[in-house]
Every structure is written in structure tokens, then in C-alpha cells.
Image (spheres, helix red, strand yellow):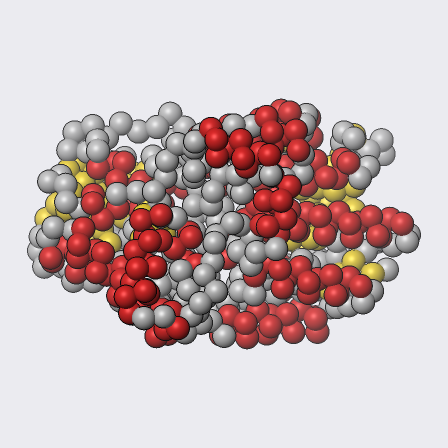
Length: 542
């Protein structure tokens, strides 16, 4: 059903406004239509795709197997779409999401190049008024926040970067036409997921590439490859079973986790298991043993293995030492999956600057100088400096709930939600696969499907029972924040000096709260089913 203008005002009235047109926004539109709701999706991008529209830097690739990182709502879609690689690249993911938008005629209810600037809940009408940078206004019963966890780049905190006169590129806002670095002197700042993927590709073009590293990361080889037709045929023949397996796995994807603990086996068997998974590549490495994220000794053993691999791969011992992570458990920062990351530092045209050993004093008009007086000249700078995770997209919008309460004020001590689904004071504002839910600690597409299905089923329940609003209670959301923190503290995720964006530690002044739910998607779904079956305990429906 298509959004239509309200005859009595200049606003466009729909049942639901969806903010975002990535995986979550597209599935919401499809699901809402199927259940008889009118809806519109608003997205600032020039094309659908969300994260996969903006992050089109060289080497951008998913770290979940393509057949799992895809929609399961339509069997014909599953059968007709052909994934070409184990881990889909950004262009392939963009093509897939564009195909989904076209195939299901979703574009008629999507407004691209349209940023939401304000969302205000009107208590008299019990509706949301949503405004955009184009001056349009939408009125809806429900406001569905499908904004993504990693959609707003963090502020640049590189000393003197504003002095640099050459071009500066951000991996999170890469030019659609691409960048030719052939023969150029390039500085790359940041060695998280984006940097690990982009730097080996840039190194193939650049005349000289200088990598500025603030914190070393544990990088697991992807071992990406073209998919064998026989394998693809088998997946398609058993797709329903595969989807069920994803929904009953804590991480929301097929990972072949080992149920043994790391020290239940001999030193030789433990090392052999790590080696097997290192050679196999990808996120399956994290399933080598069941206790890697809950037992420090087990985690130390996998850290030792990766550091030994770095020594084995990197020719220069000093460079190898700088690339070895210390001070936090493997996994406390999001584990990075890359291709030829450590091998790249054996190239003659690549130099690593370890900023912990040689601090950066300032960028200059034509390069930078370090605190020890070393000078560099660059033709271009690439920033892979990360995101204002989880809450960044919310704080960019002036969101006001009951009594004009700003969401930023409600979340001034950290984002508070009940089950990651709703916030007290903000009726009918559903949050999709973000803070307070498994989100980034799982396969995001599986998490999104969970949330969309719960959201629309809840809307159905309200419609069937003549209810107008649903709202989390303060007591329930405070208890859920404590639960999320308690579960995280049972693991190693919050440990060490990782500066992890899981806690907002990468943003100066951001409240320190563990934001994703670490209990896995199975326990999470059980929890919200119990809440639903107990008459939506912790929510007020009216």
C-alpha cells in the first residue's frame, strides 16, 4: 500500500515511517505491506543499501558467508539470486539490495536523498510527526528506527588534519566514482575493519603508503574465494534447513563451533585446532573453542597463536612487534577479517608508523611530522577512523517524545531500552537491531529479521485489540540495561584497554555502557517471547 497525502494537511499520513533503507528498512517495507500497513522509508543516501551504500571503499566486504548474510523471507529470491563469493563484496551486496528493492517494488515507498531532521511525538494525536531536510512532513502512528549500528562516522580526532591541503577520503563516505591512487604518496589512518580491508588494496596502487596505527588489531584471514557451483546448488536445495540453523545458533550464522574448552585438550591439539581454523579463515575461527570469550587463560592461548602467526608472516621483526595486539583479549574489539593484511607490510612501498612508539605531532599542509621530528609528505590521506556506533544516527536527529523530552536527554547516561526494542517516554518508536540487542555480536541480517518480525507482529496485536500505543517502562528498561551489562561482564568483551566502540570508548565524553546484548540471538528471542506471552511485561499498551 502506497503512502498518500492527508487530505486535511500538507503532511503525508502513513501507518509507519521507516528511517533507513538498508537491510532493515527494506525488510520492514516488505513486511508492513504484507500485513496491510501503509509506510514510507526515508534515507539520506542516493541509493538503497544503508551501510553497504556508503562503505564502498576498495576491499569493502562482509565477514559473514553470503548465503547467511541475505534475506530468508522469500524462497524465490533465495533461488534466483546467485552469490559469486564466500564473503560478498560491497558492489555485490549493493547489487543484491538494489535487486530486492526492484523485485518487490519497494522503491515507490522509498524517498532517497532525504535526511530525517526531526521526529516529534504528539501526545494529543498519539502520532509521530517526522520532518526531513527537504521540508516534507510525515504523520504516522509508528516511527521505526532502522538506522543501523555503524552509520555515522565519528568526529575526526587527528591533530592538524585541517591544515592538510591535499584530498582527504573517508572509508565511510567513499566517492562513488572511486579513487585512483596510482603512484601517489598516501597516508592511511586507522587499522580497524575498514582500514584492514582498504589498506592492502590501496597498497597495490600507491607509490608509497604510510599506515598510521594507533591500536593493533587481531586480524583473521578471510580466505575468501569464488563459490563452487556444486556447493551453491546444495545450499539452495537445503536453504530452509540452513535458515533454521542460523536462527538456532547464538551468532545467527553457520559457524561450526567446537563445544570443547581450550584446556580440555592437549597443547598440540589446541594449537592444531587454531591452525585448522586459521587456514579455513573467516569468523569460524572464533568458534575454535567454547570458552574463548569467557576464560582469560583460553583467550590468552588464542592471542599467543595469532601473535606467533604475525611473527611467521611479517619479515621485519620490529614491524611484526608493532602489529601484535596487547592489553586486551581477542574479541574485546570486534575481530577483524581481512585479506593479505600482515603480508601487506612486507611490500617495499608500505611503511607502518606505530603511533604508540612514535606519536603524531601534527599534520601539515603537505604531510605530517612526528613528535621525534620525523617529516613526511603525502599527496592524499585516507581516514578509516571508525563510527559513533549505535547511538550516532539517533543523536543526529532531533527526536522528542512525551512532553517534548529529547532522546539525547533521556539517553544522557547512556542509551536505555527495554529489550533493545523501545524506550520509556517514546511511544510507538521501535528500534531495529541496535543498542540493547545482539545486533553487531551476531549476523546482522538474522538479528534484523528477528526485530522486524517482532515489531510487525506487535503492531498486529495492537490493531487486533484496538490499542493505540506501546511504551517501555522506566523500571523495565533500567533492569534490561543492568541485564545487558551483567551478561557482558560474564564474558571478556568489556575487558582490557581496547577502547572498544561496544562501550562507546572511541568517542570522547560518550557515556560508558556496554551497548550490544552478549547473550546471543537464541536466548534473546526466548526472552522477548516470554515478555510477549506475559502480556508484554515491561511495556504499557493503551
